[in-house]
Amino acid sequence: MPPEDRLVCRFIAEPPQEGAPYGRWADTLRAEFLAACERIDSGDDDLGEAGELVFFPDRTWAGRTYVPVTSRSTTGLDLYGYVAYSPGDAEHEPGDFEAMADYTDETAEANPDWKLDLCEEVIGGWRGEHGQVAAMTLVWGVPMKPGGAIATAELAGLAVDQCALVGDRFTLLAPDAYRGDYLDIKLWSAGGAELASESLYSEDDEDEDEEDEG
Image 1: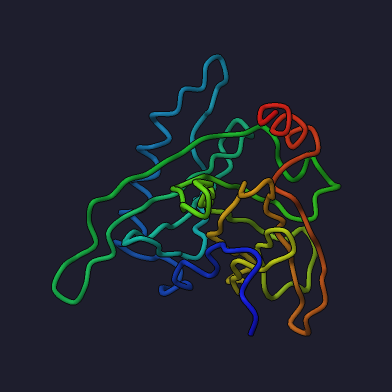
Image 2: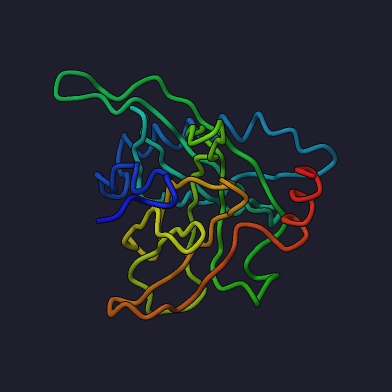
């Protein structure tokens, strides 16, 4: 095969390894996420109390496992974030927990034009050619239409990660904002038909980034 024109990391994270959290493990993750929610600086917004927690498929990268979480609060806001930890092994329990949480008033119900309901958070960087750095971005979400089987992350038309839907949810971990290109998240049927596509950025966001670079 000829040399690659675009050097960028692909499928760098381990695929999901565990099923949905339950029992004491779910209680541990819940406690970590709720503690992170308590640290949110909400200004004048009333966050209320977190409702039922929804866990997304785990992804592991650079020795850390990430389990995204969402919750609808009692005041109608979406709480979102993740719990990260060292996965441990046969002799050691998972440990070194770290959790991140934030909120938004932009809900799927208020945006019927959404094709995918997405959350994202940058968790690290990947150094590429000529000093350029890709933002390693954790993306988790649910499709707004039925029939989806696999979600992919594409950078300039190149698939850089994919995840089979688990309970109608998916988690991706992929390089973003690299060489002027940004991620598109796509939903596919089991037969390979594209059902939906969403960019992580609006056109206004991209225009602002170009102005900053200029």
